[in-house]
Image (cartoon, rainbow, N blue to C red; front, side, top):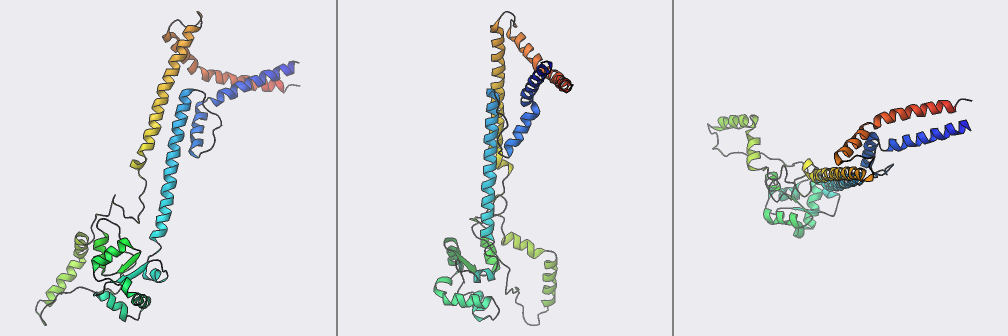
Length: 315
């Protein structure tokens, strides 16, 4: 009988300890981290303020994970589209996107006369569909690219100029081919030929050509926050601002509810009987003393638990 009584007392003490453990601070922190990976909580808050904070925390996590998942899916989709055509060889191996050139440009003439692959094969395909693939001017080619699945072979400078300007819905892909230099006409055996050559080489070495190319050809209109249709934006802090507002707003609301619950509980203590505090202030002080003395109670509970365990093991 004595041993059974000790075992019952030990079980009761253990139950009280487990009940207190569930209401501990670190257990609440653990539940918050568990919610981040969308696992079910081990226990649910009993108070209204705890439920309010848990609800807004869960909604914030749901929005954050949904935003990340949607952005990841969009990134993978855009990356596949973006890398589906990266060179002239890729155009030759598919039939979904048509391609052509400008009729009066040297590019089209080179396609018809070249013997180098894959440009020879591309020229053969374009000649077979000349009515639908060859355009009369650059503007017609730009309009065709914007309205159809169409790729245009043209001068790199012109394509870079239009691709780097709004509405930012075009892009240049692949590497340049049939590159030719630009020159200046001078009279034959001109005395200025050597000076011009030196000046051009010196300007190239100083990066003047790149500066002019950046200033007049490759605009910054489609850089920074402006994204092309084939680019995927990165989630920034400003995109997740609503989540932080939601979570912090929920925490503020939970704090207000907690204060209201505390005041209501103190008022109930005053109304119970004469043995309880006479005023709301006294009831609040009593409640706060109990709250901060729980740590000592936990320590004594652990000692009693160990003592009961030792006594129960005595034969």
